[in-house]
Image (cartoon, rainbow, N blue to C red):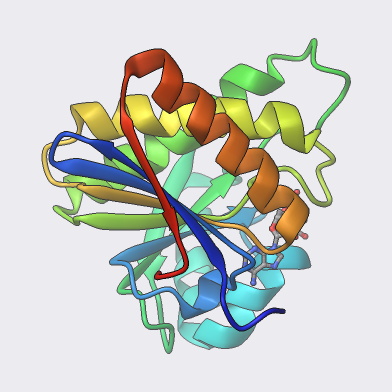
Length: 201
Ligand code: AR6
């Protein structure tokens, strides 16, 4: 991973959307990081595995208690746990849609992941939240389409939030960064928002 990630900032009044990559979300110092979990909430590979490894057993124990209470977490919904040893204070676990060709409401479910995660962060009165590229790994959502849904739904939720002021997308590889940055530039162009691009995170 290169030492200096690329950063794109879209300013929305007193709020900001930040796109960053390559980056590792487990190192983020936002109030909350979002996990691309599965419905069992019991861990897995990809970013889920990385978050549980870096955060330690506190996260899994909290997930087990949630599953005891509510059962499996449906796609599009989100729940919060403590973050254990991570720099963030909380982890919000959300379940993205598995890509089945685009006719199974995948876009609506992916938008809901972003809306629900930001709504929960707002309920917890947090000001900053970081997302990975939900569903674009094991769940095979095409990155060009996922990036548009993710950026648009996150920007809408950010505009409505009472406490959340910063939404960050922390993308693991350069290609994913490029797609999310393109989606953010398109959003900024269509809404006359200011865009800055530099190397400071
Ligand atoms: N920081 C940021 N992004 C990461 C990191 C990291 N440390 N590690 C991987 N990614 P995936 P999904 C990127 O497969 O498609 C799990 O097994 C990765 O490169 O983690 O929603 C769960 O338990 C990709 O761009 O999530 C589920 O079963 C993105 O995170 C299933 O995978 C998402 O890839 C969920 O699949």
